[in-house]
Image (cartoon, rainbow, N blue to C red; front, side, top):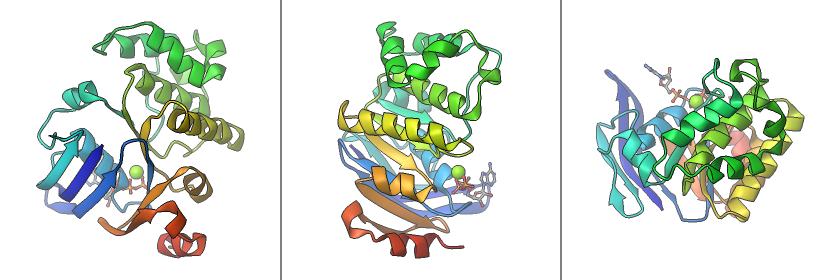
Length: 231
Ligand SMILES: Nc1ncnc2c1ncn2[C@@H]1O[C@H](COP(=O)(O)OP(=O)(O)OP(=O)(O)O)[C@@H](O)[C@H]1O
Ligand SMILES: [Mg+2]
């Protein structure tokens, strides 16, 4: 579904990604792992067109989207949940979902209900400004907003960061359901290893802006990942 090759990305003169390549087959859940600052978020930004790569190609569903603006990638079926539980803090949870709906091409209000079915705990919080939600609740809202667009590929950047364990379990169950039951293809960036290894069927390990290991989850041993990710 997503095929990335030879991706170079820089901030000004500082190069961050060097020839990154990866494959996200339709229906898979691929986990990108790597230590802090190796370029995981930069990779997702480049995949969404928030950053323009200096070299390489991003192909989504057979179409070269390397130069396509972000909103057209979203329209094509890609969704992105950035790191850090981003939503409009002054708007209520409900308004956050509605605003997202207005930006979709389908504008089908049923999509909001479908997103809330994935995170039923949000139903009791809909009148609350997003800024007053907990980190875990905001993360759930952020994923729910991405789902309102009814994407086929979901890019998630560290959904467990700053989230308490009980909510991590809810997020894990939701991602698992979206992947196994709804058939959503997921590219997950995650440093919380147990979470990543439980969910992923393929993995990509990034170090210093390069892919240093990739393959099927069965091929990856816990000790090897821990060694690759060790500081
Ligand atoms: N806007 C920016 N301008 C300049 N350099 C940046 C910018 N954003 C990130 N960087 C640098 O690019 C490198 C990769 O950052 P990135 O955020 O992609 O890493 P990451 O793997 O997502 O880290 P983390 O695990 O902490 O989220 C880091 O050295 C970072 O300092
Ligand atoms: Mg990051």
